[in-house]
Image (cartoon, rainbow, N blue to C red; front, side, top):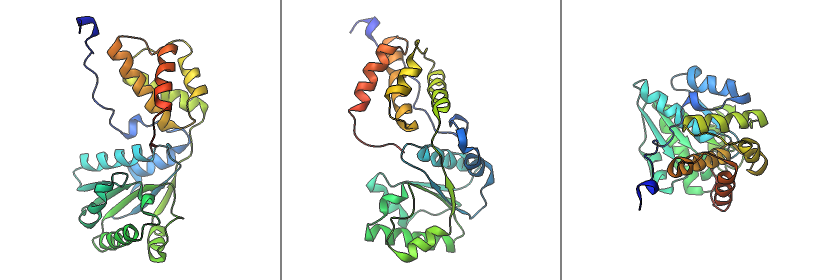
Length: 232
């Protein structure tokens, strides 16, 4: 490999924070999570896939840790982490994608037992998911209903454009003429998918010493659109 082909040292992965979340119509939700939670309170962050749920609960977890509070993060999108429901305790427990347990008898019972334990221990709980309606265990539905519901709304066109520009600036790459409009016209109307596209494009641009131009966006969009999975 020639010197010109050697990839540049890339920036570390983007860390979700409250200050790098494009708020749009969700200022009350962000304000609650960043400044308005009560010790021992329960909160359910609801919203469609790609609305930024995972970003915000990750930002909340990091913020609590910075404050010196004990916190545990359980990502239920990773099946191996489900066992953590039996052990996690502390000032706060944060559960991402909690609705993945809906309809799973053993999973619902594990969550119900954990919630009872956290209630007895006065632990605060922040959960994220598309909603609570698909849970089948009546007592669990009742427990989940005790959490304050925070609902995320999708970003509008101008806010999605802001997301593209802020991500490009954060990764220190230049956006080519027409790149923002092309991304918004061709990518799914989903903040997480758009962020995935821009980050992938920024890494390509840095590695190949290119602008995040229209041709590069086309290449990356084609690659992203063929991938499975769904960010939240």
